[in-house]
Image 1 (cartoon, rainbow, N blue to C red):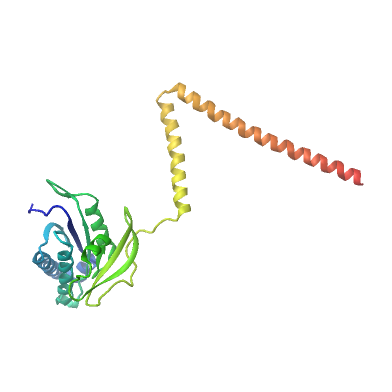
Image 2: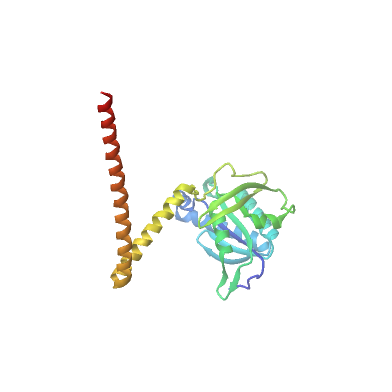
Length: 261
């Protein structure tokens, strides 16, 4: 594994959008050329700006950069090169990219921590041709953006496993996919969330009673059973009291009617 930068680093994840469809349309031989050209373009742009290749799987890359500005410049150059490249059969190869800056733990096997997951989720939320950046990366970029780049605020988004992430798009030469909704998880409303949590609490309670019963905790089970029985009788008592009151009310009404007649 190459020497990885530590401390504050910016992660970059990239992925080809619709790669399976391209493979089906182009066939194995033509797509092999597309895959090779794509890897060469992204690798060249990222390494030219000081990026370190962490991993690559299929048509996806994972890079780290010591500075957020270097990562942004690399992503912009890569998108330009991908857009200008002549692909087989006039096809368009669109790559989504996501950047996030953090201070991950650096172990023997590489980077660990939520910052890696966050960067991957940001990339997955985008569309082909987009560069999405986290709020932290956006703050570090400041006003020193790559030439021809601009920042657009996409607002707070709910990413898978990571909620409430403020996302920005870094556009290149005016090209943007901001008109498309991001691939993010839909937030449940509060009532649905309450119902789910309440159902889970009930299920946990039932499972706890069953576990204690099967474990042979006779005394605890007996005490809890007595408690449930008291609750049941209390409920019956309330029900009978209500019924008695209703009968008395009906009797009074009948008496009043007779007196009037």
